[in-house]
Amino acid sequence: MMTFEFEAFEGHIVAHIDGNDCLVDTGSPLTFGEGRSMPSFGKTEIGAGLPGLDAHEVGRLLGRPLDILLGTDLLGNQPFLVDWEARTITFDPETRPAGSEIPLDNIMGCPLVSARIGGQALKLAVDTGARVTFLNPSLVAGERPVGHYADFDVTCGPFTCDSFEKTVDVGDVSLDLVVGGLPPDLDSGLGFMGLDGILG
Image 1 (cartoon, helix red, strand yellow):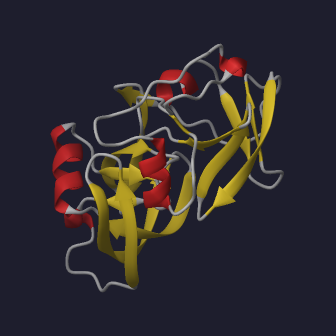
Image 2 (cartoon, one colour; image 1 turned 135 degrees about the vertical axis):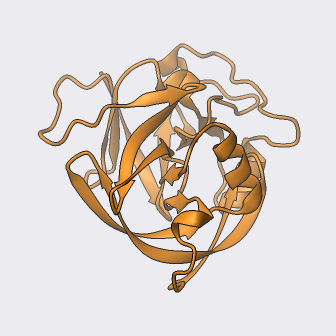
């Protein structure tokens, strides 16, 4: 069992692990942070990342410096528990808290969950790197926006979108959320994988 403190930065989990500031991102199949190491995970050297996108660039887009983007290639190796009130993340916890168990699937190592909006079945990517939930534009078509979001995605960069009030049911849990409508590039990529959005 390993427990680390984290900072909640605008809805993101930035964990302090082995002297590194790490964005915990289940939406990324890859961990990267050139020149960094995480001995707690048995990694003496972390790779540079994607062409044109390293941890420093993700930090710039996020608005907070980062050393490592921690993806599912490491996160998927053991269960982990996020205690939001205590601001801790524990890997391979010895006990589980009481709550609802939600079955997960995965695509490229990233977790997927079945959900519903108004009885319509959906498949959503569970993305701890996303500040909010984003849905296919058809799920918010014709509805009145309640605001706007400015965000970014590691595959398509910065974007802005309208936001809407939606109730999303996951298992036996109903979530009253303010969600964003997916921008076209990101919606197209997720749709190609059969996904209806991102649960942030």
